[in-house]
Image (cartoon, rainbow, N blue to C red; front, side):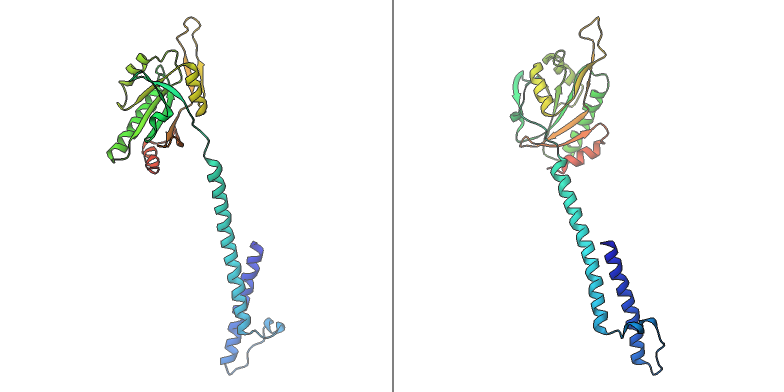
Length: 245
């Protein structure tokens, strides 16, 4: 394609040059100097126009084909770029001590984070960041976003433990716990990795939990919209969430 366009442009430049020489011969009393173009016959205005059309057509074809391929590439990324996350789940709301499901939060945006209350630093930092995101959105009168903290350590994160933990963070947090099977269901739905680590052989309750460090944005219809990693800035997270309103 590139060689075809180059050839067309070369023809156009050659035609323009010889056309100019022909015009000079037409309006000059002096005999025109002999050039190599004479070997190929006289240059006409119709030939010059044809060369221009060919050159313009080659350029148009190049750019239209480039745009088509870019659009096709973007369509492929859009169709396969969004992971299939989310699904039905049931947990316990630690504020009401009642069962809640994914349907309980329909009609509002929600921001899920998976962690555990005995986490020494990462979970507290991420919950503070979520609180900062909420404050930015509230300051701009955006639609409500419900923050959900889902434990991956149901053995130790009882209702009472989760309630006490909530006191250190944004008041709108919904603290969710449940049975091992219930926690397994929601973590599987969102493909959250978690595993015990640094276990103390002398104390069954002394351990850490390795887990994914990701925030998940869910829309009012319950569908997964986006996710944000630990590297995402608070301002960028807030701006991205706003783009879905």
